[in-house]
Length: 421
Ligand SMILES: O=C(O)C(=O)CO
Image 1 (cartoon, rainbow, N blue to C red):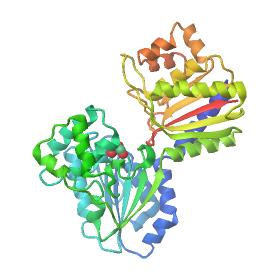
Image 2: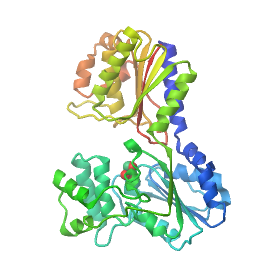
Image 3: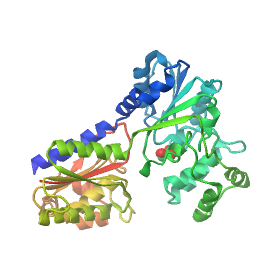
Image 4: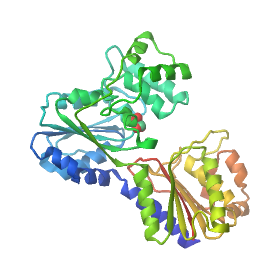
């Protein structure tokens, strides 16, 4: 089993490497679209927002050198790795915006305020941008934003719903930042952490026409019984830009790129590949059992693929916590799969978060095989009880099946790879 476990790790780590912010930004800036846009001269001013902002900005600064006329980076506390020549760096609150969010954003706006038609704003966007890039709409306070974010995070709303509300309380979200920089052009490089790569939802879409409407926003308020004071309801009633004429966008990293890279390595290692989905979004343990059923089918009848084969999935599963244990969605998926592939030879399942952090643990996910359930039983642990207690971390740790990568610096959802040799 060692060889196939090693193959799974190679596939997972190489896939993450492909979507590291540095690689993603360099590839986007070397592409013809950006060069074509900036060849005619004019200033290029950088604005980088999100958890990967520092690393994206560093790569842009190294790639563009003195073509950059300064800029601003706003990232989460602890995510800056020092000064970058010519750029101002702010660290700020996440998931709740704070005073630094507002001052970092104000500086960014200041620098792009008086640009002209031949100038370009290089806008580097990554997950977390909603909390880190903010200028509240007139009449909306920082305290309002914190209270609304708090309600939205607690009520079970998904990221598209959460950001539908955030956009309307903001002067920079929902396409309004792109309007602000007019007549300059804006070139956005986006590292997507939203399933389906909805550009109007990633970081609340500061430079993308907003696909959501006032009606959607009001429906969300009603659905979750949000308590908003009248001034905020008024802000929700104002429509966001639906068309922008000054923006080009490249999605430089996403779960699709993560999966494509996994398929490529698997195929180089001699596996037939099948990309099953890039929008996996169900309960983690159900995804694990489903993948185990596919493994059994492959072993029994060579369908849908003959071994050696790799089935690749991307997305983000959910866990509805019932127990008091410790774990994460990837670990729970792996543990459920371990039960289902019990005693299958040459079969492994890897599930890991591309950011290197799975739930409130130091692991990125789990790597299990046909022996894992038996090993757990030998240690006196019952996989079913571990699952019932949401205690996947303890079980996988005990049998050496946790994957620890440390923080990877990127964040494009999760990857699962089923390998059968
Ligand atoms: O809106 C955000 O900040 C997210 O993390 C989703 O992109």
